Length: 105
Image 1 (cartoon, one colour):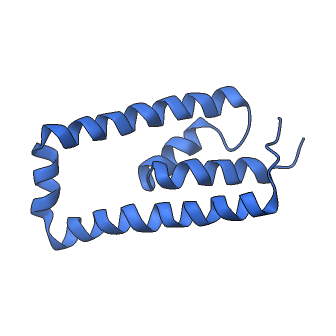
Image 2 (cartoon, one colour):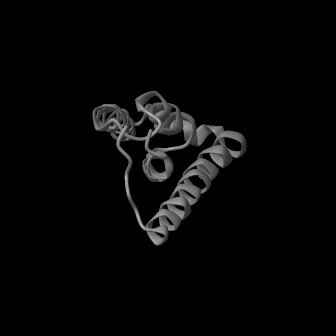
């Protein structure tokens, strides 16, 4: 398996982005989910919001396919799980960070 070689500064920046990616978008979503669920329902009824949601799923699938094709990192399944639990703002930098820390076999 090939590894992704990144500088320690780049790896630190990716880790920071992943942290922000899981805290900020998920924090807003969880706040809306528990504090004002009507906002979540309004988003699901809004056709423009649904287009953005569909696009996010399409991009997630494309990036998972690229992750699989690259032969690096934790794999496409892990990328999809990270995307569903976090967001693309979390999963992309987290996957790159994980891919850059693997040891060659």
